[in-house]
Structure formats: structure tokens, C-alpha cells
Length: 255
Ligand code: PGA
Image (cartoon, helix red, strand yellow):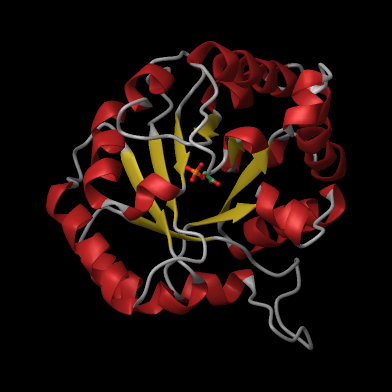
């Protein structure tokens, strides 16, 4: 299990799923079980349009709220279709996912765009969850460490190392996302350790306090093994976060 100064974080990324009714049902079931004194923290990241109602439902619970994306560092202006970090704060968001592989691949977000979003989140007072991870081809070509290092270094080079004292990193191998094929605990641990070493080469204290989540087909049945690795401090969960029972099993495994 992770070092005691790193409180495990179990984050649910709902992606573009659910309805007003199903979101309410899911959150009600989670809220019944999550207590403030737990060793682990729970976070849900619904689609933008559900944030308001979920925010209201979570008000009396220890469950944290996050968003899945935001505009760049811009606070407001002529950016049709975009949402700013300041708006997310108004809806009670403490976290925002940036650089998810679906945004990188489907919406062409480059390392520079991801870095800009990371900066915009922190400027608004929101903790960015920076996602990184390699494709299957990159893994098979032995490029995993290089790809992940490039993605994380883009932020370090542009913004400095100190920004990681108020951020979360999520390692999500693309070949494991939504495929049912999870990285083995050893595979995941090896990359988490590399990420921490990369941060540590710049600042050892920041590295030892940084929460690094694993994502990619995390389920109730494999969570304990993954979360048992020394450098895995939680999970970023897609599919299984839509099922209250399975998400709670993962959360229980983190406590
Ligand atoms: P998955 O998604 O758990 O459905 O594999 C994880 C993610 O994309 O964050």
C-alpha cells in the first residue's frame, strides 16, 4: 500500500455516460457507504451537464467532485463550447482530468494543450489529474518509459516542478482502457516507479507526496492487487465507476 502521507484516491471517470436519473442513483448509493473518516478519498467526475445536480447531492458527503475537461488557461471570452476552470469552481469541482488519452487521440490535444489546461486548472484553484500512457505499439516497441516521460516532462519543462505539489498523475496504458485487459500489478508498478523517479530527480519531497493513480480496466476483482503496489496510490476508473457496487469494492480495496 502507498506511503501513509499519500491518501489513496479512487476517482470515477464517468466519460459521456448516464442520465440525470442514473447519475442520481449512482451517487445516492455511493453516499450511503462513504464516510469522512475513511483512509481513502472518493472522487466522481460526471459530464459537465450533470455537475450541478451531483454537486448538490454531494454537499453533505465526503465524496469529492471533479470534471473531465476544461478550456485552456482562459478565464472567460469568445471560446464557443468551452468551459473555464472558474466555472468549474462554482460547481464545486476540486479536481479536473487533463490529458486523458481519449482527448489526446480523439480531439487532438497535444502535450502543449494539455499543459495549458493543467495551468488553467491550477490558476482557478483546481487540482489537475494529469493522464499519461502509451499505446500497445509503443509498449511493444519498448517505448513506454520514453512516452510517459515525454508527457510528464512537457508539464515540468513548461511550468516547473513545484506545480506537482498540487496535482495528481494518472498512468493509464491506452491498451488497458475499456478493453478489460489490465496491466499486471508489476507492469503498472514499474511505470509508476519511473514516474516518481522522474519527479524525484527534480524534487524528492514533491515526488514522495505525489499521488499516482493507475487507470485501465480497474475493477473490484483486480483492485486490491493493483493498489497493493508501493507506488500505486489509487485508481482512475472508467467503466466500473458506473456500477456502485463495483466502484465501492474498489474503494474498499483502497482503505
Ligand atoms: P476503464 O477507463 O476503467 O473503463 O478502462 C479508465 C479511464 O479511461 O480513465
